[in-house]
Image (cartoon, rainbow, N blue to C red; front, side, top):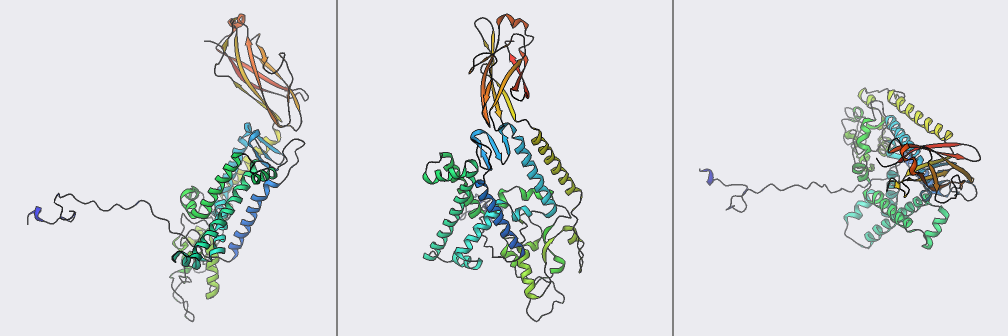
Length: 492
C-alpha cells in the first residue's frame, strides 16, 4: 500500500488538507478539592483549643491595656504611633530612626522559629500560626451551623434549597463577623483603642481607619474562611524552608510503618497474627485539615497539628491495640525501629545549641543597646536642590534641616554648635540671633531649619567643594552632647 493511501489518525474528518490535529492541551490549573475535616477529640485537639483561646485573648485584649507615661502622653500600653513616628511597648519607645530594634525583633522571631522547627518540626504552624488559629475558628463556626464532616458532605451534594441557602448564608455571615472583629482589633493597635472604637461606631474615624478595617476584614475572610489550607500549601514559604531546619532528631508526626503494616480491615473476634495494627479506617485522613494521608510519609502539606494522632489513638482504644501508631517521633527512631522499639529524643545537639547561642547573643545586644541608648537624638539632612546658593556679595549659603527627638517625658532645651571652615555663620529661620535655645516638648520631634553662611571674602580659604562640618547638639540642663558630621558645599 502506498504511504499516501494509509489512513491518518490525525486528520480531521477525513482531513482533505492533511493537517494533523494536536492532542488536547491539559489545563495547568488543578481545581481545588474542598476538604471536610472531621471533628477530632483528644489531647492534642484540647491543646489546640487552649492555644487558640490564649492567642485570641491576647490579640483582642492587648490594645485595651493602659500604661501611664505622664501627662499629655498616650497611655495605651502597646501603640504603633505612626503619626508621631514611634512604636510604644510599655516603658519602651522606639522611634523611626531606631527601626533597627524592630529588625532585631524580627531576627529574634526568625531564630526562635528555627529553634522550634529543629526541635519539633512545624509545631508553630500546627498550633500558634495566625493562619492556623483563624482557620480553626472558621472551621468550628462552619461545624456549628452545618454539622460535622458527613453532614457537610450531604449538604454540599444536595440541590439548592431553603435549608442549604440558610445554613450557607449564616456561615458566611458569621465568618464576616469574625473578620470584622479581627480587622477592628488590629486597627486599635494604631490609635487610642477606646477613642477609635467610639469614632468607628459614630462614623467620625479617619478614612484610613475604615480602609484598613475593610482590608483586614477581607483578608481574614478570604484566608481563614475560604482559602484555608491553600495558604499553607501555596502562599506560605515556610513548608519549603523547614526541610533545612529538621534532622534525624527532630520530633515529627510520623506513622510507625513497621508496627502498622500490613494494614487491612479488622473484624471482631479475628486475631492480629501476621498483620499490622492499622485497620485502614482512614480516620487520620478524615480529621486532617490539610487532607493528606500521614501514612504516606512526611509531606510538605503537613503542619504537625497532631489531630491524626488523636484520631488514631481513639481507634486503637476501640480495637484494643497500643496507642501511638501515629505519634510524635524522630526519623532516627523510625530508622532504628524494631518490634519492641526503645526510642530516645536528643534535644541538645549542635543545631539547637547554635540557634540558642544566636538568640542569646541578639537578645543581649538589643538589651544592652536599650539600656545604654541616649534619651535624645538628632539627625541632619542637607538641602539638595540646590546644594548651595551664591549670594550677591559672592558668599555661599548651604541649608540644613535638623530634627531633634526628645525621648524624655519632660520639656528639654538644646543649643547647636557648628564646627567647620572659619567665619561660618549660622542663621536660624525660626529664631533670632546665632545661638538660640531650642525647646522640645516631651516625646516630640522638632525640625529646625538652619542656613550656614560663608562670606565672599573667605571663599578662597576653602580647600575643596565639600568641606567637612560637625554639628553638635547640647542639652542645656544635663550637659549631654551628641554630634553629626556633614559637609559644606561650594562650586568646583
